[in-house]
Image 1: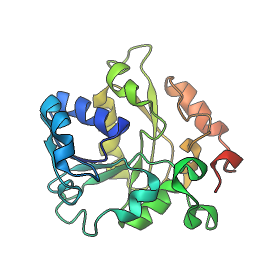
Image 2: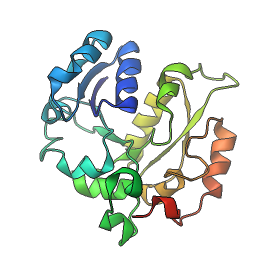
Image 3: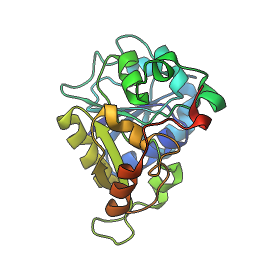
Image 4: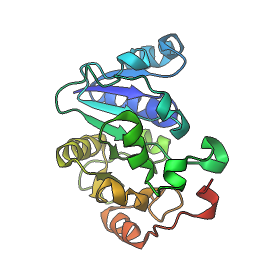
Length: 220
């Protein structure tokens, strides 16, 4: 599968490593330019590209950048993507720590991923936002393993969600459908499932226990 990754921080870098290891054709980009990704490209065999090139021909595009930077992604970003491509959104809203106040989230009550969809003009599948980056490399397990971790996955596009869930399972994790994007508050920061390292039953229970009220620490 051809996969474009926009953002080469902890999550983006480790997804690049693991997906390339599994044999996928990975292109990776960051805001500083492909020359800054030479070491990652050499290590993994991925292709370092500009952000504008990251989605070309991609069947899956991963957006893993600070939320405040999402509106700065180039227009027409997905014009050259493969038909039926899926977008994975790993982003979280940290208003006090990093992003500043975002009116659409604070005043309109949008979930982080619904706001992201409006910025990029395409449906997203929310996944990996509560995953420890090191787990992508260290905690993958074969299907059926008793200590296999489950990850929540939210999205409105069922075909895209199916693609993303299959990719996550290939990476070595179970998945739990956490509903549509308007329900994706269940996996936002400071919810019971956020950062949870456990199996399907525990993740399902944590999603059910979540509150739609945004915690004070994550309000702008």
